[in-house]
Length: 104
Image 1 (cartoon, rainbow, N blue to C red):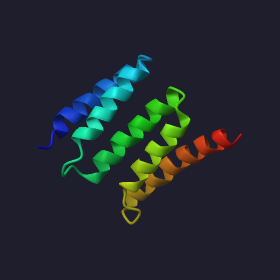
Image 2 (image 1 turned 90 degrees about the vertical axis):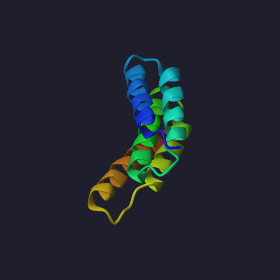
Image 3 (image 1 turned 90 degrees about the horizontal axis):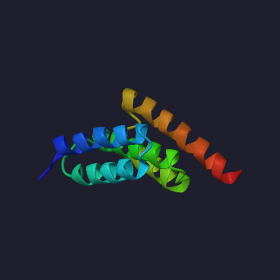
Image 4 (image 1 turned 135 degrees about the vertical axis):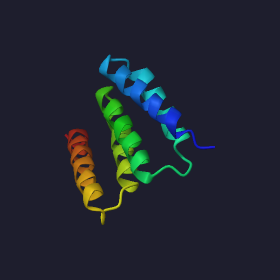
């Protein structure tokens, strides 16, 4: 059964925890939200959750994991959709900046 409503609640709580500096809680909440969104939720929703997880991972210093989360977010988006293509560019830019930090 899809629990997308609960997933969005966990997403909000996770991002609030991130803003408060509680990255462990933020990561746990977002991973739980992602698990709940695996049903027939829209791919854009899953992309958003993975992007938020990438932000949390990046802020907590888990750069390799953040790069992977950005890759997953990008994979859910449709490059032929104008709005989603813009998101892809933004996520790729964030991911590529992290890759440059890793290479330095």
